[in-house]
Structure formats: structure tokens, C-alpha cells
Amino acid sequence: MINILMIEDDIDISTLLTKFLEQYGMRVQSVETPKAALNALELDHYDLIILDLTLPQMDGLELCKIIRKEYDTPIIISSARSDLTDKIIGLEYGADDYLPKPYEPRELVARVQSILRRYRPTLQPKSSDFELDESKMQIRHKGELLELTTAEYEILRLFLLNPATVLSRDYLANNAESISWESSERTIDVIISRIRSKIGDNPKQPRYIKSIRGAGYKFTP
Image 1 (tube, rainbow, N blue to C red):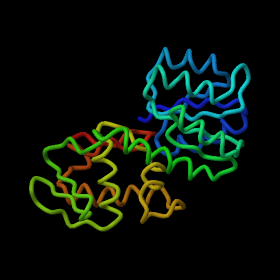
Image 2: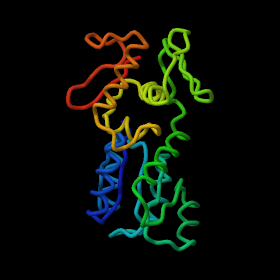
Image 3: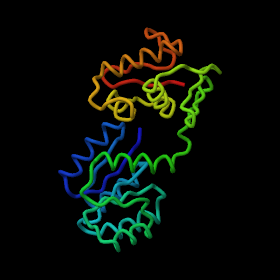
Image 4: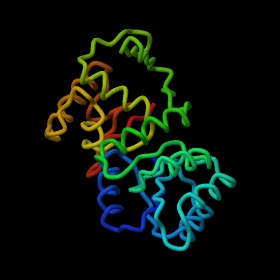
């Protein structure tokens, strides 16, 4: 699971963004002060940092500079300060992206996913039973090309890119472009049932796609 540190002193904003990011399989630790942020970084590993600039105790730009000296964790600056100088300084201090408020939470998700694709190139299928060819939108199982619908391909691709990770039905629906976000949980279950059938996965004793009660599904390569 993607582990994110959010440094944001506006509790309403941090609560809203945290709930939204969690729908996409991300775990968020939210802190309100630079001191708390630095303590959190010492105690845990984070895949990405979301940093506000207007903070108590210390300006966010200075905090960005300090973090970058000690850690190579990707940083997205999320700030209502839209001054071009702030953006330039933030990027010069080591931020990877600058997202001016207000913005749609879905844009933040897209920025997070885009940065992590660059920083985490190891997120590739680890299963020798499956071969993913994203350029052709094809997946092979034990050398045989699977005949998949677009939705089936997108769901199986998400499993292959997130091995041994519990993925909720909301996460699967929100990250499969061909599936409407309004789709019911039953829709995801039906698609997964079809995928299991095509890869010979017994639903009663699944080898690859396992149901996790109350949480979603986990792909075991």
C-alpha cells in the first residue's frame, strides 16, 4: 500500500483529501506542523509527501529544503500560494510537483500516481505465470494470450502491478477507466469472476485472486 505523509495545518482540507486518497488504496498520515512532520519521517517510511506551504513554526519552502537534504522521498507542494516565485523556489528546493489550491482531489490522485510511476519502476508484474504488455493492452497466462474485455484487462493489470496488496472494490473501480465510478460492488465481483474463469482460478480455492472479507481482493503471484 502507498504510504503518504500529508503536512497540512487545515484539518478540514487534510480530512477531505485523506478520505479521497484512501479510496485509491493509499494510507495517509496527516500532521499539522513541521516538527511533527520531521518526527514522522524519522519513525516511518513514506512513498510520497504532500506539503502545504503556509504552516506554523516554519515556512513550507524551508521545510521542503530541509526534507530534501535528508530524504529522497517525492514531494508534492499543495498550496493556496500561487505566486510564481514560490513555485520556482519550491521546485529548486527539491519538490517534484506544485499543485495550486483549489483543485479537484482527483487531480491530486493523478499527480501522486504519475510521480510514483517514475519513482517506483519496480512496480512491474512479478509473476512468472503472467506477462503484461501495456503497449498492446495484452496479458498472457502461462504463455497463452488471454481473451479479455477492456474492463477485465484493466482489473487484471491492476492486480499484476500491485502483487500481494489488498485492493478494495472502490480502488479497482476508480482506477479502471472503462468502469464508471458509480458502478456497484457487484459489478467488480462479476468482472473478477470472469477473470478467474479465464485463468482457471477456482473461486472456492483461488490460486491467484483471493477474496479478503470486508476489504476487497488480493492477487498472489
